[in-house]
Length: 98
Image (tube, rainbow, N blue to C red; front, side):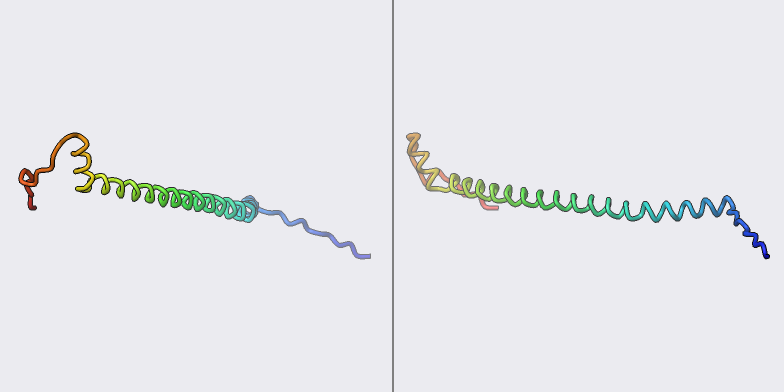
């Protein structure tokens, strides 16, 4: 009858640390990948919301600029002047050339 003795392999401290680090990386890498993609997705959503707000504000600004142009037109100025009792005298207007 043969007796077989099994030898127990002892790991060195450096090997234990190395195995621990490999396992830690294998566990944390997928978690970090998912976390990073979630943050990136959230940031992209915020960017799209800001683009929509910018587009809305540009429309408002364009509308206001059109109102400014209407109010600054010569016809509107003459209308307001007439309402205030002023008269339009073309000889009193001086042109300034740049």
